[in-house]
Image 1 (spheres, rainbow, N blue to C red):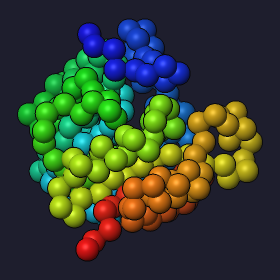
Image 2 (image 1 turned 120 degrees about the vertical axis):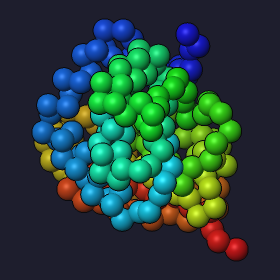
Image 3 (image 1 turned 30 degrees about the vertical axis):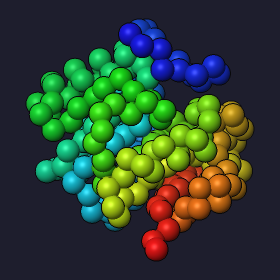
Image 4 (image 1 turned 90 degrees about the vertical axis):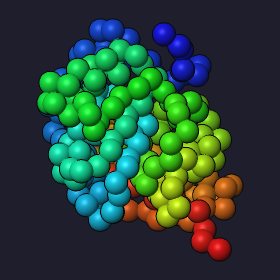
Length: 200
């Protein structure tokens, strides 16, 4: 098992990867998933990569919503990958939904994608700007990199997860560094950053 974590990044081992599905019961996470699914309805794509796919819950929901797509999820934890792969197999999706060990710095293979997403993972990344530069190279022409996170909307529970919050300025800085087009959507305490290369 290759160690794809950088110092300071949150790690998920054998036990935590099996306990993680309990998080799906948290109402905020359920609302977050609905936010992501609703947003993705506005995009046309046939291939998608989910970076930091965890136990695969979101990617499997995206596949059920879109159908007829090829979906790939990568996660640095081999234990998370194992849980996600079993889940896809049980649902008989394993021919269209695949999970591999990988990270924002190590995307396996050489495929390119119509859409690349990251949800509740970007805030953990060690060097976000460098990773974004690499990820943009794995998009098909017209492709988009969509990052879904939580921002501080002033509610009490945001104080509990203060270290996990992202703000619009965090994304604007990276867009400036790489000369990328950036579109921000904020709704219900959730934020989506959409990166695209500037069209010539």
